[in-house]
Amino acid sequence: MADKIWLSSPTMHGEEMEFIKEAFDTNWVAPLGANVDGFEKDVEDYIGGGIHAVALSSGTDAIHLALRIIGVKPGDIVFCPSLTFAASANPITYEGGIPVFIDSERDSWNMDPAALEKAFEKYPNPKAVISVDLYGTPAKVSEIAWACASRGVPMVDDAAEAMGSSFKKVPVCCFGMFGILSFNGNKIITTSGGGMLISYNPDLINKARFLATQAREKARHYEHKEIGFNYRMSNIVAGIGRGQMKHLDEHINRKWEIRRRYEEAFADIPEISLNPYLPETRPNAWLTCITIDPESPVKPLQVIEALEKENIETRPIWKPMHLQPVYRENDFIQVVDGVSVAEDIYNRGLCLPSDIKNTEEDMDRIINIVRGLFR
Ligand SMILES: *Cc1c(COP(=O)(O)O)cnc(C)c1O
Image 1 (tube, helix red, strand yellow):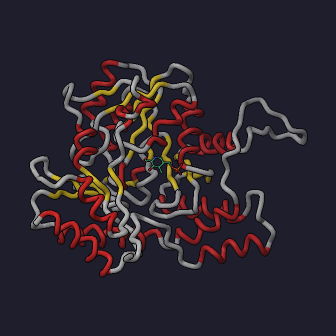
Image 2 (tube, protein in one colour; image 1 turned 90 degrees about the vertical axis):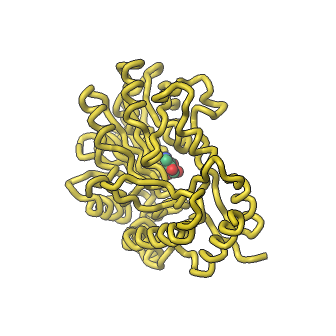
Image 3 (cartoon, helix red, strand yellow; image 1 turned 180 degrees about the vertical axis):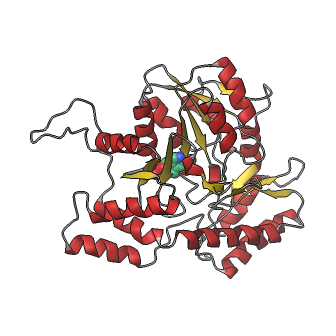
C-alpha cells in the first residue's frame, strides 16, 4: 500500500518540545504558568491592534464562553451559518438557545448577508450572531458586522479555521465583540487540542478567564457567586502553542503553495472550481476544496473513493446544520426559498488533501488520480 497522504495533520518543528521541557524542568506542569501567559501574548502580538486573548481547552469552549458572557438564555435565538462544523452551533444549545441557520453565498461559501437581512426581518431580536470563516476563507465580515452593530446585536467570529486570515488586512477574528480560534489537531497550527477567545475589550476577556476557572471569587476560602467552568488550557499544551506560533506564517505560505499547485493542475478542467474567496481578503488557505459542475458525470464521492483506494485522505464538505437530524426542527433562512446554496456546495464539493508535509510526489499522486477521473 502506498504511503498515507493526510488531509491536514499536525506539523511539529522541535521548538514545541523545548517549551514543554521548560515546563517539566520548572515543574510548571500545572497549574497555569509561563507557557499559557507566553502563548496568549504571542497570539495577541500576532493579531495586533491591542487585542486580548484567553487560552482555553478548545475552540468550542471559547464559543460557549462568548455566548455565556453575551447572556444567551433558554429560548433566545442565535443566528449561525448552516454550512459549518457542528461546533459553531452546539454551544448555542448548551445555553438553551435556539440556532436559526442562515444560508451561504457563493463568493466565499460563508453566511450570506442578504439571507442575514431576511433573518433579521423574521426574527428582529436575536441575542447574537455567529459568523464563520469556513476553510480559512474570510466571510463578508464587514457587511455582517455592520448588519449586527447597526441593530446592537453582538457578533462572534468563529475563526477556528481562519487563524491568520484577513479582510482588507484586518484579521477576520477581530470584527465582532468576540473572535474565537481553535488549535485542534488539524487546524493551521495545533496544540493537540485547545482554543482561544479574543476581544478588544479587556473586561470581557477577564470575565472569560474568571468563568473558565470555575468562577472562583478573589477570597482565601472558595467563594462562588456564579456557575463556572473548567475550561483553561494546560501549561504543557500551551508550550506546544508557543513553538507552533514561530511557524504560523510558514504554515500559511505552504498552504498557499498547495492551493496554487491544485489551481494550476486543474486549470484545464472546466468542471472543477476551487473554493472561492473575495478579492479584498487574504485566506490562510487552510484546506483547498473543489466543487464539480452539476453537468459533469464525475461526482464528489467518486473522487473521494478513488483517492481513498490509494490511501489518500479527503473529506466531504461539512454537512449543513439544517440537514442534521439533531437540528431538523430549526429554521433555515435562504434568500430564495427552496434554493439552498449551502446544500448545493455540500452536494458538489469535497476537501482535497492540504497537509503541509505533502511532497511534490504526493501532490503528483493526488493530482494524477483526480485528473484521471475527468479524462
Ligand atoms: C474546529 C472548529 C471549531 C471547534 O474548535 P475545537 O477546538 O475543535 O473545539 C469550531 N468551529 C469550526 C468552524 C471549526 O472548524
